[in-house]
Length: 439
Image 1 (spheres, one colour):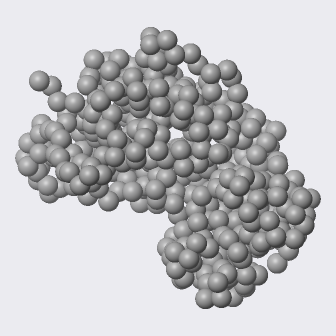
Image 2 (image 1 turned 60 degrees about the vertical axis):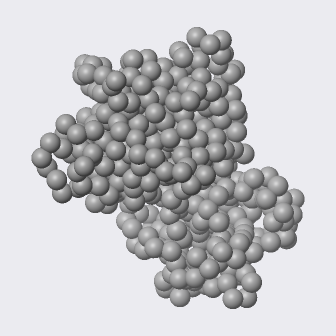
Image 3 (image 1 turned 90 degrees about the vertical axis):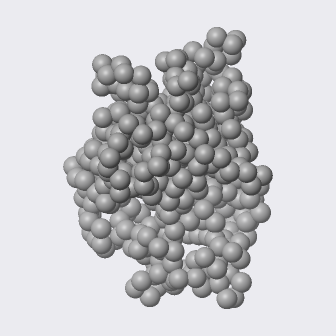
């Protein structure tokens, strides 16, 4: 009996991998740490995506669903909850017992070979160690492994050096600091409070917009948006030039909230410490500036991959982004030029460990530019490669939308009054209102 391909994660890319594998006649075994398919998406279910239904459904998955009588929802921009209920859950149900819920992968290795052993390595099956919520553990042999576990459980901290700011962990334990985007009820509950949003990407902009809606009718509410860099840069996105209209509109709405005086923009603020002894959170920057005491801080500075369970797998990762090296050159925000990120497949996702692939948001490491469409193309190519269809594996079947912004990082420590530029075009001008990463 041929061994299955183990897929780690039953999110959009993990379930798509299952559909593509079945379509190729390969048996998948999908392990999901959460209690339902799309568990991570469910945690931000109140957030509306800036991709339409046609951009959120994998082709092989749709073919599998359509054969069972499923119909694609009417075109529009669903929330995360709708994505789960109307697409991911029916897909997981069709995959049946191939999907194991409450099953966390805690280790991947080669059978009887640790990281240092060369002899017979490529021919040996993988062994995947799984821990279930009831405490039961099992060891699964696999012909290949596709890691689609995402990055949701590994948010980046507020600390400017990549580590939690001094006192950040204590403030989070006290309920003053969190990483999620507030829903309408949570935002309303903060009326009259001082709220700080830290981060410069789509998640931060989404949080700012939600909170600004409350501030419109609750003048006592104070909202501060903290950016590490000295200029606005990409925080307002590509606007009308973005080929995903809702993504562009997101940045424009955030920009308008700043212009309307609902949000105080704080630039060049690199958090060193969060004091919470008073029962409120006081952010202190590396240059000694302090923000007014905050009742709540939302840290939305991006995500990073969890590599802890891959210590016995031979990986080729970029030292900066923790993404596969050949992919990293396409998505590196330090140097990436204007326009869309090129679609990537099995060749860019391969590692020295033959038969092991990281796909989805985790494949981008710390880079913030991932789209569901990108992951579906990755999965299609990887599964084609595993099936021996190398022509299909190298073929690109996706054109990605232009972001409308320059992808370069600009001058890292440029002061607010300097019009710093990125890789290929002037950055938006700073809106000065006083002394803030995607979905």
